[in-house]
Image (cartoon, rainbow, N blue to C red; front, side):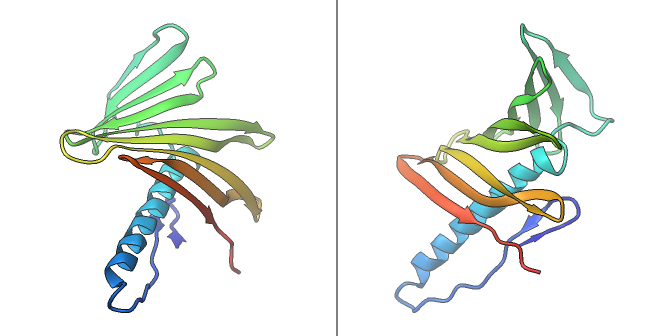
Amino acid sequence: MVVDENGAVTVSHEVSANAAGAEVVDRIHRDVQRLVTGFFNTWRTFVVASPFPETESQLKIENPGKQYRLSYLSQSGDVTSTMNNDFLITEWSLSTPTVKRTVKPRFEKTIDGLLMTDYRGVFEPIGDGIKTTLDFHIDYQDVNGVKVPRKVRLSGMHGNEPVEAELTFTMRP
């Protein structure tokens, strides 16, 4: 796995299996690769990059009650961020003609700032597809003064199938 200077993740490895099990192993490999890549792409949005638009984007800001709602159009689709009175993002969603993706992050205040410790991700296809809801819990490790994921535990549903996994990451010199 490689994380570039912008926080984009590339996962690659080779899997080999005998002919009888190759199709199943390939499917598991693709699913795990999608899971790891998806996790890091979401994680980087709230920890490495910024969940807010570039300055040239047109923004709509609303203040319904005890929250703020920021809406804008991105290259990927319509984005809405909901923040509490402390300006912590409590929900982020992206809507396209084919899918609505929602992330509900939870942050912990540390002496170095905020750290995303958990999030719920919901993937809702519009039309054909399978709704997926996953809850992620992130344990961190310190690498040269930077907090990076050490262990990610997730559970949820992919359609009617339960999903549960634990991913552990180690840093190699």
